[in-house]
Every structure is written in C-alpha cells, then in structure tokens.
Image 1 (cartoon, rainbow, N blue to C red):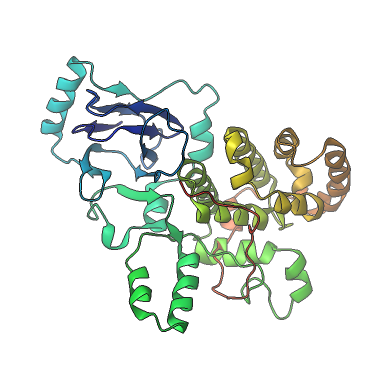
Image 2 (cartoon, one colour):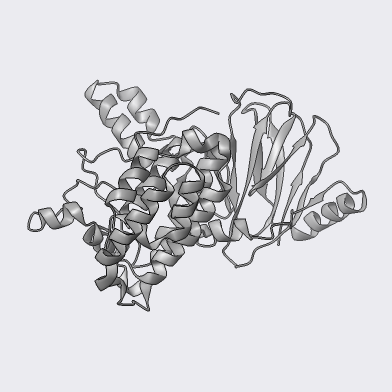
Length: 382
C-alpha cells in the first residue's frame, strides 16, 4: 500500500488519483488519500492536479502531477512555483502517527475501489517504476533525489524527439542561450520511432521494409532498445496513453499513435501479442473522454491502418470500438476483416510461446527525414 498526506489545501484544486478525481476547496480540512493498492511490487500510480473552481469552464489551468511507486508520501503547496509538490517520507514511525491522527478525525479518503471492469489494471499493468524512471527526466527541476520514487509530468512537457528538433533549430539560428536552456527542461524520453529512417528500412530490403515493419519492430525496437522484452513496448503504449488523457500531453499522444502504427503495420506479431493489443487499446478507446476524441484521436491514421495494415482483421474489439466512435463504418469493418484474415493466415497459425525472446527490441533512429505520424492531432493547452 501507498499513502499520500497533504500539509494543507492552500489553493482550490481538482485532485485526481489514477482515473478518478474530486474537488477540494481552499482550506478545506482534507488531509490525504490512504490505502492505495499495489498489485505488483513495482506497480505505479499517478496523482494529478488542476487549480481553480469546479464550476469554471475554461481549460487554461496547467495540468500536472506525479507518477509514484510504493511508499509513503506527503504533499505541500510551493508558493514560489505555484504548484503542489510531492515528497517521499522515509520516517515510517513519524508518518504512521500523523496518518493515524488524520484517520481518527476522518480527514483522509481511501483509494477509490469501485472499478468493476478493472480499467486501471488493464491500461497500466505493464508500467513499472523502471520504465517511468527511464522515460521521465525532470532536468534541473527534479523535485526528488534518486532515492525518492516521484516523477513530475505536466501538459507542456516535450518529448526527447521534439526537444532535439527544437534544439537543432535554435543551433542553426545561433540562439545558443535558448538551446542551452532546453538541456535543463523536463523531457519525456520515449522511444523514438521513425518509419523512414535508415534503421527502419534496410538498403538491401527497401521494398519489404517499407511495406512491412516487422524487422523494425522485432529487431531494432524490441531487441536493440527494449532488451528483447515486449512488455516494455506495452508499458510505453500504456504510459503514453495515460499521460495523454490525464495531462493532455501532445507528445504523449503522438507516441501512442506511433506505437500502434508500428504494431499494426508489422506482419510478424504473435497471436498472444495481438490479443493483448486488442484488449488494451480497445479499453483505452472505451475510457477515452468524449471531449478528447477530436484532440487525441488521429482519424486519418486509423483509416489508413484500417485499410492498409496487417493486424486490423485480428482485433475485433478495437474495430467495434472504432465503429462506436464513428471513426469507421460497420460495412467497411466487415470487408476489411474478410480481406485480412486470408493475408495473415500463414504467420498467425504459428505461435510464439516466449514473446520476450522472440521480440528483440524497439527503439528507432534519429533520422530527421522521418514522418510526423500523428499530424492530425490538435493540442489544446490545458
């Protein structure tokens, strides 16, 4: 279990824990959230904040928060930075005494347990602290030292790829001071995926690798960049989606689409992995807030994958959810299923029992000519 205690509520705020949220007014006697479960030793949660009244309709306030793993934490408001900061407490005796005091006074809330469909478990089960620590780099604004399991994320954070592109632009314009500032910013180090890079398309297999991304997926991304563990790819798929819907983070939504495209455009993917994709992505599409559809869903990409990818015929739950979202039509779904069942038959009849051994690794190159995968997503700063 993990627990989070609040010093005080200095600024009115909406507080979220994973997929749930509640509003707390200024100076309200709210002192924390307790008994946050960890189904696995290295499982993680995310607490998030947006300042302002619950009745406000504008979305201008920064959405920010903290990923954390098992432990005891407390949160206090930083007047200078104008945000709630999260710290880990290692003095368990002191912490337990304070928590018991708040429990006796009914000033804390228990972690919300009503989740009959296990939504959070399905969309986060491959995210662990090692992955979070690898992706989230807080630069000079690192709030915790290396012992503390807290990582800050907000709606404005850029990805490593976005950061590098901007840095090259500033270097060419001789704006060295701003270029140096970029090196100290908070950055999301997602695996870079570029479909037209030299890593993705071998000179001796140009046509094959252009049409089928299996080599790029299995040999470059999974084997070379993810220690031959497909679970790391699923973890990044889940992590980028959650950062998209909770923080409205633009770079995370791009990464989510890139991973989906990479998997769907690869023919050599085992049944076990395809079934997992179908379960996870269909659940993600189910919990996607309706108001986020136009912001976070690249309909052009989904149409392209629907009519020209290897796996769309093997993911019935995703297809059904796309129909419900009015992204694809029912008749189109039937046609594409019939076409793709024939095309996939040969490989899908083979089974790969040990997916971590079969999938080699997933990280891409830094080739500047790679396409922007999700150019159709428009970001509303929150």
